[in-house]
Image (cartoon, rainbow, N blue to C red; front, side, top):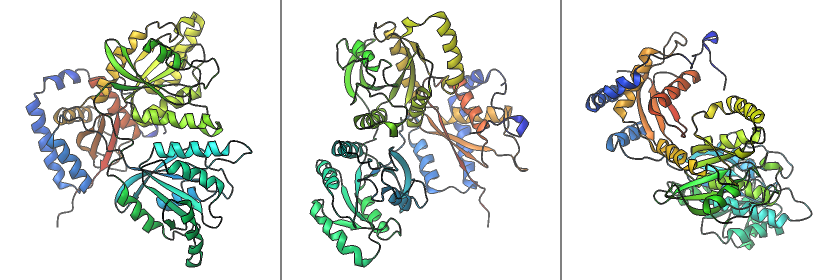
Length: 509
């Protein structure tokens, strides 16, 4: 994203604001604020709104104080051995060339998620890719890949090359798929015409039921297959569904060997997980309920995220995917950073992974007892340069080995989760927007000035705001709104999502 500045015609999101906005908002009576919001809401009837807009607005009016989650889209995973056409099938479903397709096995290595839609229903599709076969261990690698795909999805598309038929590798995947109670669709790819359908019929031998003949290349049979799959998918993902109640879930993340397992052991008061100087000891996430600061938490110790997932082999690749799973099931992430080492690209990438997941965030700087004055100066400079985009995240300086300042994690976690749960009443939010736009209107674009018509908080966990506007808002202006939201309402430790819905005035006939 480019930096917008006033010199280039953009909006300078670092502009100075008039003081006293928080006092004026606090002094505004709730009833008056809500009355103003109702008036703004009524004025939206002059604009073209779609069904999704109306559903959103009605949901806010029904229970403005409710904790609302964004719906977790159902997930379909595509699994299969290398070079059977999984990525080509993904592109066919998406209707555009997104996944890399090449006529050699093993092109796709990372787990890649795409947003898809069919028949008006949105869903997520995961291109898991096949493993490059080597002389040893392919069975274990393929099984691990299939197991991860099953963990993270609501339905599985198992793709087989109908021209080659069932192979020993396919049989290994089938063994894994038979253990799941999720819908599995056997997709016979590369059936380009009726004459080749007999080849697809031979795949009944795999024991997964009827094979569905398709041609990812030409699109033959894909529409019927999607109709069938979507009829079996839940409205909301059962896997990625938010967990409510019970101890709050804390994912411990970080690159290998930063002390994640040591932190869990010290918090639990016992040697709960294996600790070794060899990086990457942890393979599977370990859930542990611990009492810290007088409260019970569910800590998840996760395998260290490698520099690049596709460079990891065997169990390390599996561990990286499992780490992503743990993050998806958590509510707040503690990203552990080793202060004895420079902040690396890996560290930043892990933090960005948390931001993308929408989870609350706490930064824990580990091995603080090893820090000398010179390294401290460098560290502060690194934080200022590399972590400026998460300056809102609580920082805790700890030693996982000795337990030093471990108790400081609790208020940081509580603050982050409180922010993550926060809802701003619609009246106060629109009063906030009115003050902002009055003090600093959006710059004129092409002779027109985009206006914010109405705003509402569509969800919490994370706080997600929707602005109905007359035009596209500059990235710099959106950052300005986010910055002022933090200054007035805090949101310490929580990402803020700001979405726009550009709507045109209805033409009177």
